[in-house]
Length: 374
Image (tube, rainbow, N blue to C red):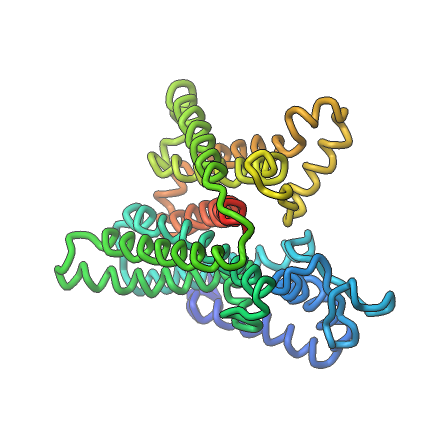
């Protein structure tokens, strides 16, 4: 493999891989539309987005007309539901790694040296991504309440998972280019400051739009839920970090203080799931949230099956998901040791940002959609 990289260049090989994979998939879809497009691409990738955009629990292919399963007949073809499946994960994860590699090449062109500063500068974009995703939830709520909305398909899909990850990443990349330009022209002392400022500004703008739309289409405002999620996840993060520092300091030798937001991101995701899926009604919401990921759905199902109802009625059945998320965050911190940073600091920082994004993105979305009643 190295000989091909030396001969053609890593960027050209990456570009050729993108063309072959997605061009080949498009060709197969054209040659075998039913098997490849309908029964694979639509059923596992585009169908869930359509269902999510229309707030349907299930969408049916219905000969290409695409209808809610409640309306479509029993022979309407493949169906899809909002959220992810193990099949979609199998497609999204390689795609995410391919996208990540492309962004690393783009960052190489910027010739950035202080990568750890970039981690902190990009952190607000992780919160922005979750808030922007909740804006789409509010858009759906407005449409249901008024019959009209600002966004519709296909543009609406840009802020629905997983496409929103690409959108936020592109916005972050453009912001990074602007921030580096400001630093190199001596307008700022460090590129991380304007970068964090842009991300924070986008976060505030998203929250303002969310609040405005939720006031029209939402079913209430429940700030106590958000406060509880943030306080509990912060306490958990502090306890875990103190334990690492006191008893296993070698775990965070590579990440340093960057390990804190990694733990916090996944603690937020775990806590938001526990509260949203088990205890949302205790905060005044009309019903508990429904899991949209196969992992937390499986945990909720099996915990409910293994433990008697007398116990789950008291402690709920989603709490193992929080334990799993925190344990995974600690494991990730351990994996990113000093040797990994020394060998490939650029790629390591990008992976860490991805780890934060896949925790804080859905966690923030779950917390905000419950808080604003959308």
